Length: 209
Image (cartoon, rainbow, N blue to C red; front, top):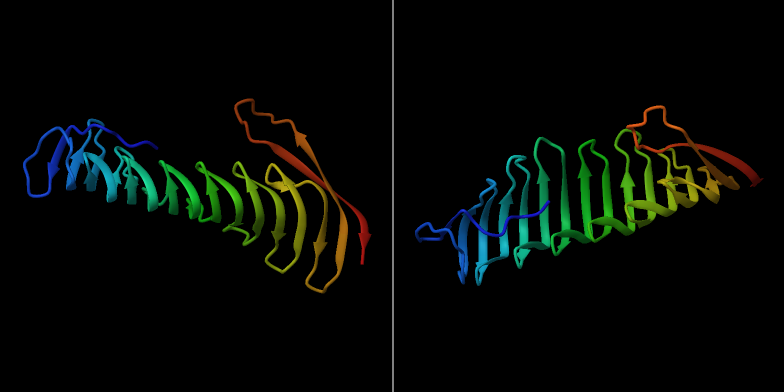
């Protein structure tokens, strides 16, 4: 989601409308050819400091810090029609650093981001089941960590395709533990237009105590 650079109409605070922000420092309102609107601070003609950017026609809006025309610093991106929200750190227009993303289905990811994707340590909570993934993420997928059930049962081990894969163990609320391994089998999709991976999991127990 990129922002426009050159305004169709710009009105500086207390000034008259023009079509240029050249060398301007202060607050202003810019309307862009595609209908986007920016209200906020400028430094030397570029969006810099705090502001609000509203995207057309979606109605999505970003409220927070800018640097060199890009989302940079701390900010909140609100998707219109309850389609989700991100609040946290940004770098050069992308989610980068610590942030919290609430999805349209009310799932929540809280943790680290890099270059717009979930990377680093984070926790994902599934709204419909209250299950949680907690651990290390890479390129939007959890790769190692814990699968935490609402009843307190915890699976610990590696993940692939956001599902457990390889050697791991279950820890139960009664202190019992089960070791073993998961294997993944990709089931062919009957719909050629559906690119979703259908993965069948199989667990093999090797030790319990």
